[in-house]
Length: 127
Image 1 (cartoon, rainbow, N blue to C red):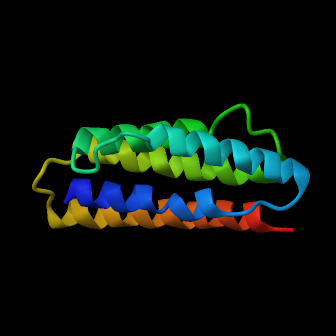
Image 2 (image 1 turned 180 degrees about the vertical axis):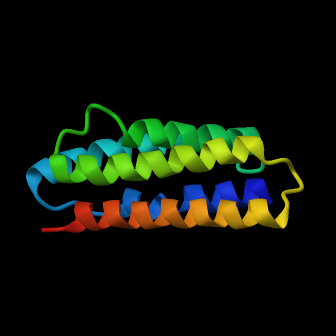
């Protein structure tokens, strides 16, 4: 179950990677995120829980990178990075048989992550 949740979370990155960013400074910041996020998950095995956790951690690092200097993109990217890291950290603590309470918390963290990624995508697509 944990593996499936992390796989779905990483798939949430795909719309961002396909997004065309508007405005030069936003475009540059979004392009950095796009390029590095794709590399951060490249070659990871979606059937391997540890790979999925590492992928989320890698993505969190990319999103919180000092290379992102556009203030609008930076704010949205850091929020997304924090939520990605929180999801990865939580996944590390949950066993293969999560309780109902743990699943609820995982879904809450996943919702926070997808919402923050959607906000970042909106910033990147703003003209």
